[in-house]
Amino acid sequence: MSRAARLLDLVQALRRRRGPVAGAVLAGELGVSLRTLYRDVATLQAQGAAIEGEAGVGYVLRSGFLLPPLMFADEELEALVLGSRWVAANGDPTLARAARDALAKIAAVLPGERRETFDEPGLLVADRQLLATAPVGLDLLRRALREERKLTLLYRDAEGRETRRLVWPIALGFFETTRVLAAWCESRAAFRHFRVDRMVAAEIEETRPPRRRRALLAEWRRAEGIPPRP
Image 1 (cartoon, rainbow, N blue to C red):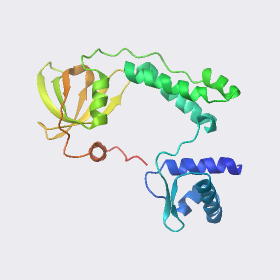
Image 2 (image 1 turned 45 degrees about the vertical axis):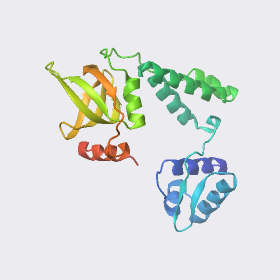
Image 3 (image 1 turned 30 degrees about the vertical axis):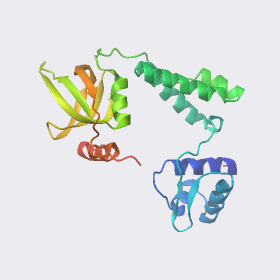
Image 4 (image 1 turned 90 degrees about the horizontal axis):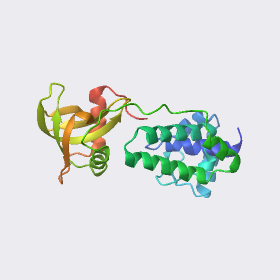
């Protein structure tokens, strides 16, 4: 492996972590000595990488440091294209347009030979699955998640009974034939899952949940037996 490739791998290893990681862990992951790891960190810092920490304490990459797309590995580009094209085919109109715009921005900075592979990838996305129509738009649900607002739902269950729920949105799941909102339901005092196609109406409230969405998401993961993100 060239030193340039190793430096990129080091940036990626730091980017995957949310907190400080020991130099010994990074050195083991990259297959280099601790002394080499320290030199590589110093090199990246001298080149402007926002790496904080020191030997014996650990290192963390401050958010906001970006690499240009032309420096992505082939597999990384394939993952970006495949994921973005899935969103373009299966997301709501606003999210689908954002995915197409993101692909266009990446393509604009790729060199010629990589642009050809980018335009005609060997990985294809299946046609959009038939989804039940719903009066509640996904853009409204995504805004409630993004702004961390409570949400009032008029919800119809499988037997056709309608109830009004005040919920704290946690996550929106995209499945092949349905979309599901995970939320804390105030009336049930428990986590609940609401199919979007059974939502009769929804309204974003001005009030915020008493706990941050990130904390609720971690608690929901534990309740559902979902491993935490690395």
